[in-house]
Image 1 (cartoon, rainbow, N blue to C red):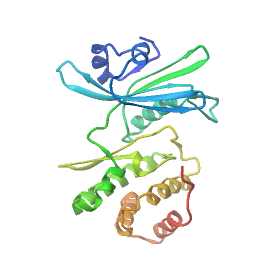
Image 2: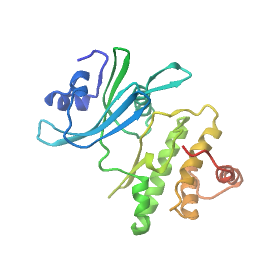
Image 3: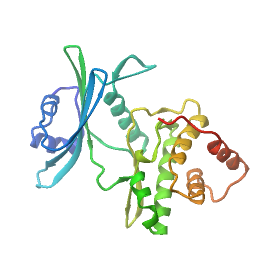
Length: 255
């Protein structure tokens, strides 16, 4: 195993048991199920679901993401870095900040003959579904379930912004929610573009604009309920009215 590789404590045993606890074995893994292949320039990215048996014979589910020369450039990495490296850092940072998000089970990267390769293994969020899933069933949901989903999504975005971070790509498909007997829970995915909210409220408004714009199935009253829950208030006052006006005014560029 590469000394630089990250393996989560709760994944170490199941990966070793299945012979998949190194970059080389995960890179060489041949899947029999469907996988998503994305290409950009001369690089590529593949995503496949893994079902691995643990010591008790139970299945643990993961998504294995492999990429070759899929680089992102930003101020701290002007020459570029693997996008999975940036996302892995964000996952770790969110865990440290207590922002619910997807979990990393394995990460490593290497250079081979001028190519920059990276692997990111994340746990499947099977008991969660994207907000788009719930929106497709919105009219069939009980009133209380809709309320729970709205409040869970609002609490998640509030936790993100209270930590002075912005998602920078916040759409309903990136908020994963679950419903159970205890109400609803929420997690964020697709963290590769997340960054500090350098411009304060302006960055947070940008997140809220993109999320609310793409939440067309929700009624104005439900969007207001989300906004109040996000602020942690029972009703609008003058400062919150002004903030709401800034959110609903104008449009942001679709990504």
